[in-house]
Length: 184
Image (tube, rainbow, N blue to C red; front, side):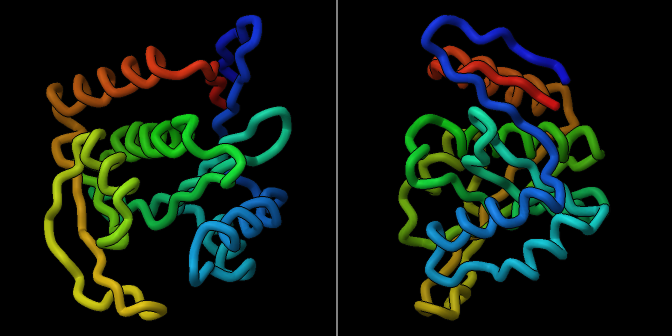
């Protein structure tokens, strides 16, 4: 484990790969975060698939957020992201996306894409802040409400310029947040 030392009064967040032992905590966050949550069985399957990357954020031994990334050939797809409501507005979602982008680039992805509900302004703001651009719209994508999905993507992660953008986003995140980060 690579760990940043925790300073007085600052919490430390541990980023690590999800394991089957994390499924109950992930499913619990999933249930309170989405109108139509994925089932525990589907999440368990997703976490066990070797080509999928699921990361969790943990504070004081409690899982407070997670992200799922599918690696498909030379592209990544962020399939899910959620943070426990008690821990929102601390930059944890942004941290998880940054970690997923880092891991996608390390796996050879030059492009990462995702979808989010057209009415989800917080998601739109986060993804735009990180350099995602709107690439399209899927009409009626969310079957629970009929809401459209915005398709967003970030390109050139494997280039020097893309790596520099990602490094700058990590530096900005560290300047803006009072959390220390450990990576396992």
